Image (cartoon, rainbow, N blue to C red):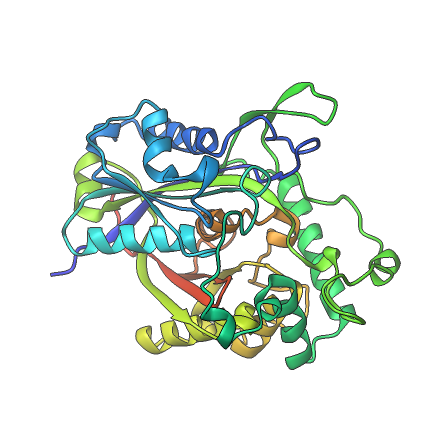
Length: 398
């Protein structure tokens, strides 16, 4: 009999700008961000002691430099038990979600009872593509310039006939939703404050996302240059920015949670990974979500809330429209209603975990009567993941 895997808690640090002079976390290492997330999980759930954890899976898009084997080294650097195994999982942007899927599957298979799944990336200290050495044979199959992120976003915009105005409106909506959610205190339950530095060098507790813009001017956005393609459509305003952040979740066998007297509201229902053409990597969620719907027998109307990572406005809109997850254009009723990566930031491998953290928070806060939530994202080189969470119908502890 398959065990049930429930989400006990989910936290993240704020997402900060990845910049050596202006980033709020410029003096904070990525392993230290993970420590803050781990510390919060144990403080908020005192029934769970660190030595009780069966394993820790950490997703990171580039496990080199400060992020080399960060799954193990960050755990040890946090002065947590050596006896708890911990590992790094790399799957580009979906890495944090892949870590969550692997952790949930271990619980459902009966191999483990208590797991931590996490994601982390700092795009300033470990730059995107750092130390990457492409296989020469790959370059006989693809033009290397066609699989760069900006080029894929341009191709998707052209193939799906997505206009500049629609993409700018999407970006504006992301910032407006994020600002409203921040000002209403929606993120307080998920963001763990971490000491950082203002631009003037003064210390403060970072408890909000740095990239959220207070106001965007559509005219200025339309005038922005398109760096990825001559006479292209994609600008910085409609792209996710360079970011640093960490997220972590505590997952547990449902019977174990009941024995410990822990509360839970949602369980892991299903997770899907798919691959697709890397020159249009952003449309990967189309295939992942379709496969998930086929596997579960569900349809878009069954989903109460959706988190889709906004690597670029073009790819997010292409996926939303093709899958009929919501309206064709912003504002949306159930997709990213607290903003997305364009406003909140996209620390690559962290984002797969972050959108699950936010989805769990959004569902409990704004969609308490909905049964299903969906999180999905694309990844560099043509990988995509999708995870379905389901409200637990009967929990004496929730």
